[in-house]
Each structure stands twice: as C-alpha cells, then as structure tokens.
Amino acid sequence: MEKGNHFFAHGKLLLTGEYAVLDGALAIALPTQYGQEMHITPSEREGIVFRSLTQEGTPWYEGQLFVGDTNPITQTLERILSQAQRMQPNFLTGQSVHVETRLDFPREWGLGSSSTLISMIAQWAEVDPYELLWNSFGGSGYDIACARASSPILYQLTEGKAKVYPIYYSPPFATSLFFVYLNKKQNSREGIALYQGLKKNKKPLVTQLSQLTEEIYRTHSLDTFSKLLSEHETVLSSYLRLPTVKDSLFKDFSGTIKSLGAWGGDFVLAIGEESYIKEYFISKGMQTILPFAQMILPTDREPILPPVHQDPR
Image 1: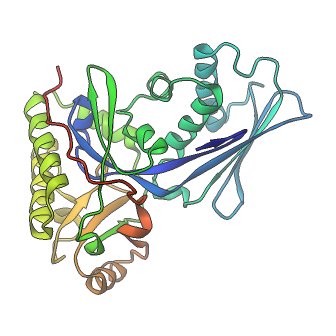
Image 2: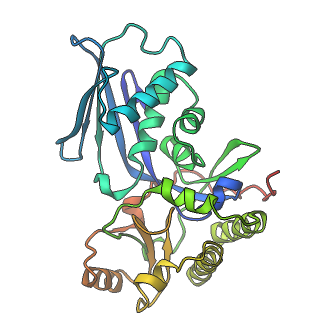
Image 3: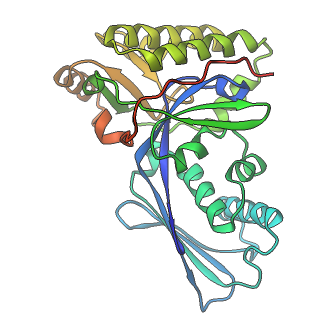
C-alpha cells in the first residue's frame, strides 16, 4: 500500500515449500495482517537520516547514511539504497530526507522486517522489488510477494521469474490452526546456506513438495491437512538430515506441528483444540499463540483453483 510518501508492507509466513521454493517448488505463502510502515519527509539536515521504531514507538535504530558509519545496520541500508539508485539513477538525487519506519509486530517474531523494508523502498524508488531483493540479499522472493499481496498466494520461481497466484484460502478448519512463537529468532540466510550447501539432486524434492502443496491447498479435511503437513515435514527432514520440530522439541504433543520457513526458530503452526494448544505451549514457556484469523490477512475473493504444477526448467 502506498499513499504519497507513506508506504506499508505485509509480513509473511511460508506454509509449504520451504527451502525448495528456491529451486522452483510451488509454495503456499501467507501474508500477515502485521507489517511495517514507512514515512518519507523532507529534511533540513543534509543527506539521508533513517530512524526505525518498534511497535511501541521506541527507536531501535537511528543514523545518517553515507557518512562512513561502520554500523552494520547502516551499511545494510546503504547497500539497499545504493542498489535502488543503480536501478533508478534519479532516485534520491540531491535530496535530503528523513525516513522513519515502524513495525506493528515485535522484531524478534521474524515476520519480515527486511522484506517489508525492501518492498517499501522499491515502491519509493519505483523499481522492481524482486530485482532489488535479489541484488541486495538474495532469496526466493516469496516474502516480497507477501509484502504486496491482498490475500494468501501460491508462489513459484519459474525460469528465474516470480510467479504469484492470489488464492482463496480460508479453510473450514481454520479455527484449529494456531501460530506459536518459539522464543528464538531464526536467521533465514543461514537456513538458505545450509540447504544450498547440500550437494544433492533437488528436482525430486521440488516435485514432491509441489505436489504436496497442491494437495494441502485443495483439501477441506482437517485430518487430511494434518497428514499432508506431517508428510511434508518428513520429506524435508529426510532431505535436510534434520529432525522435525515436533521430534526435536515437542514429542509429547498430541497433534501436528509444522515448521514455517527456515527450520529452527520463529513460528510454527500447531493444529488442535485451542484449550489444549494454549495449555501445552504455555507449559513449555511459549506465551505467544495466535489464531489463524488474527495472524493471516483475510481472503476477500472467490475460490479459484491453483495452476497445474509444472516442473521448472
């Protein structure tokens, strides 16, 4: 969303296709109601001043860019803006501006403080957000697609291009779906490096997870949904040679738990009765438990079928 010099971008959660989405797997991506906003105002102070606020309005970063600051956050911002300038030479030419961003979710949640920022800077600079991401950090781009989405999406990289399919996704069993924060932040770039370092044929994995994604999207049965998600976890566990989150942390949980995005942190999806889920996870010290309807951007369109899966070339 953009209005003048005010921008907003949605956060993201990846329900299916994690890791393999980098190699063309079809994935269900869920934009969140939570996100980040950005305001641009002219500044009397020469240059570019950047200020980032938490959801409570407390500054967690403030600095002037392009003055030789060695702060890693400053250098990251400079890299993004410099890349935007390469793509759009007139961007920021001779301008002095104050940039203020504000999250409406806790930073540690991992919903996309970087991807939402890149999406908004791309809107501001009027450049392609995927190119800006790939030239700055890399990644599949599903998070950029979520940043600008107005509903859940199917996402796929095909011949290096992002394909985004808005979908109707409001399953009849949504009241049994809960997002649980694991109290630790996951570095998605570390997860990507682990996956890409595996010298294995990825095509069978891409095909298998794409097929599971289609089945997961189409089902109206909670039992089938749970079984398919468990199968998805097992397939990736075997490929990555890592235990599933349920096996490593929640063996005594009576139900299905699905990792979301890079394994090892941030949020998981837990399936079951609300009272049991809250009692179980609170007993484990996990207080942040959000129902599907509170976390995910509502669907406001008629149901459509996803595209027939084609193996990427």
